Image (cartoon, one colour):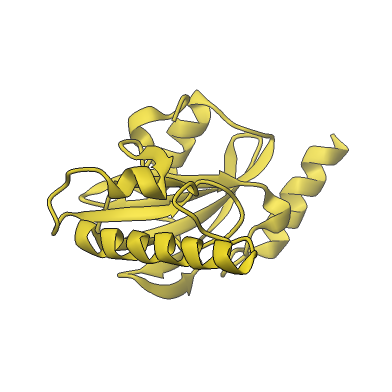
Length: 184
C-alpha cells in the first residue's frame, strides 16, 4: 500500500482483529473480504456478509472459551489479526513473472471465480504491470498477481518466484530470464 496505494485491490481494507471487527456497526448485508493478516493459513480468506462474519466470530469466541476449559490453545481467537475490506467482484486474475521490472511471461489462473489456467496477457494488463514496476519493485525477481474488476486492473499481491504456482506460464521463458539475470 505504501508504494502502490490505490492500485492495490485491498487499498481500503483495515487491519484489525476478529473481535474488533465483530464489534463494528456495519450493515448486516454488507459484503466483506476477510483473510488472516499473517502467512499462517489459520483460515481461508473469503467473502461474507457482515452478519455471517458476526456469527462466525461468535463461534470463534465460544470455541476459545471451550478450548481454555480443556487447556488447549485454539488456532483462532478473537485476537487473531485479520485484514477486512469491501468485497469486489473479480472477473479475472493473472500471475505475472517479473525479472528486472519486465514481465517475462503471464498466466491467467482464474476467470469468473473459477480456476482457468491459460497463457494469456492482455496488453492493457501488461501496461498496468509495467507502469507499477516503473513506480516500485520489491525485488529483481518476483511475481505480481493482478485482478480485473469494475473495468480496472488492481494488484492483488506480490510474492517470491521460488514459491509461486506456475499455472500455464512459459517455464522456459522464466528459466531463461532468471538465468540471464543472475549470470549478468
